[in-house]
Each structure stands twice: as C-alpha cells, then as structure tokens.
Amino acid sequence: MTIPFTPDLWTVLLVMLTGGIIGGIVNFFYAPLPNGQPNSLGRCVILGIGASALVPVFLFVTQSKILDKLFYPAGPELSAADKAINLLVFISLCLLAAISSSRFIASVSDRVIAQLKEEVKEAKEEIDQTRKDVQATRQTAAEANQKIQENTATLRGLKEVQKARTLAPARRSAASASTLEVLNQPTSASHPDDPQKGRWGGLAVREGYQLSATVEAVDNDNDFFAVHLQVTAPDSVQLPADAIVVFHLHDSFTPDEHRVMFQQRAATLALYAWGAFTVGAEAPGGIHLELDLADPNQVPTAPQSFRNR
Image (cartoon, rainbow, N blue to C red; front, side, top):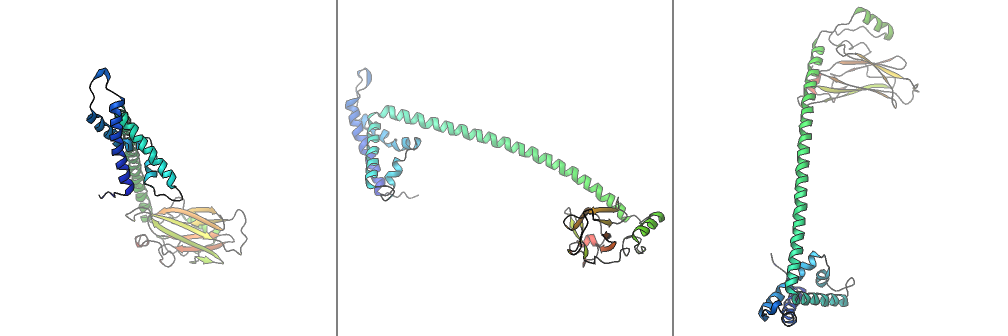
C-alpha cells in the first residue's frame, strides 16, 4: 500500500517530531526525577518524541476531529484561519504530551488497553449471542424437520387412501342415484369409472356461468395434487345473498357433494386429488356445468401424470 505523503502529512509529522524534542527538553529542566535521581536529556527527548507520536492515538480514542480538520483542505466549509487554529492546538497537545511524557504514555496505554478489553468483551458477548442464536436456529430447524416428517407421513397416508378410493370401482346405490336424478334431473351416468361424466350436459360454460379449475402438484414426486374449482357468475345476473353452487365430485371423495356460497360473484372449492375426474356443478337457476379435469383444453394447468390417472 502506498502512503500519500501530502504536505499536510509532512506538517503533522514535523510537528510531532519537533514538539517531542522541545517538550522533552522542557521536561528535562521542568520535572526532575524524584528522590534526586539523575535525569538524562537524551532519555527525556526520546520519551518526548514517543509521547508526541502517541497524540494521534489519543485523539482517535477521544474521538477528536482535530486531525481530520488538519487534513481537510481549506475552503467554504473550513476556512484557513480555522485550520491554523487546529494546527496550533495540535502543536500544543504534542508539547504537553512530551512534557508529561511518562504520565501521558501510561495514560494513553491504559486507555487503549481498557478500550481494547471492552471491545474484546463486546465481541465475546456477540459471539456468545451468535452461538445461542445458532443453537436456537438448529433447535427450530430440528422441530421443523420433525414436523415435515410428520406431515410427509400424513400426506403419504392421504395419498394411499385417495389412491385406493380412486382405483376402487365406482359404486352408488340405486336410491342415491334415483334421488340425485329427481333433484337435479341430470343425464344418466354412462361412465362407471367417472360417475359425473356426461351427467351435467358436458359444457363448462352456460348462460354466462363458467366452471374452471387449476391443478398443481403439492410435492416433488407429482403424486398428489391440489385442485381448485371455481364457478363464476356473469355480471348481468343479480345473485341473491344466499346464492350457492353445488359441486358434484367423483364418488371416491367423502363427501362427494359440496355446497359453496358465492363470494364476489365466484364460488370456489379447494381439494386434493390423486388423479383426474369429471366435476359437475349446479349454478343458481338450475344451470348445469361440467368440466373434465383430464381434458387439456379445459384444464391446461393439469400435469400429464394427473390426467393419465
């Protein structure tokens, strides 16, 4: 690293050297050693230069801005007179440090050591706090990992149950089918593995009402899917406050019929499924809607693995 020896830096170094020498000479004549011990001019000068050299450290510890103003160029923010005053103060400090060199060196050393100890103490406290935070984070991570394992086991069980239900033959009692036909008057089912297919007219859009769906995998293996069904009402229709949509699902769901109220002209149903199926929906006014989740034209977001089941 190259140190830029500017005129201001040379001035500061010259002041410290001169102040140390002059202050050491003054110290030799002003403060004789106790108990009549012989003093040495060379010793006083060396101590004076050393004490004068510690003045920048003293100013740094005390957070003084004198040195900053000495190196700051004169201008609108710092006049030449102010800079000269700060230089005179710095000269005086160097002389005072050199005159009381022994006590000044001991004082600055004690202050620096005390500050270093305080910084070391704070650093240790920060390290201890960091260790505690790391330990707490590890504990939280362990609890989260345990929760993930529990949720994974639960999800695996749900997958198996849903898979078994989906693969099981569709069964519906004659009484239930008869009741459904009386209430809704849909077309009779012609797909035993997909009971709702063809029962609700085969259209996802009718008289402004639209049945739509989105399908997303809930895990990386694409083995279980979140299905969001929604029926939206046209703006031209005045919906009553208690307007609902009846969603009819595959009979492997329990329950396989859900009644959902409209919220801001949309009725939404969220569920989980293992594979594709056909959804029937009854909108207000006896309007029947039907959506095949396996049809890529109707549900383009559905993964291929979902459609194939």
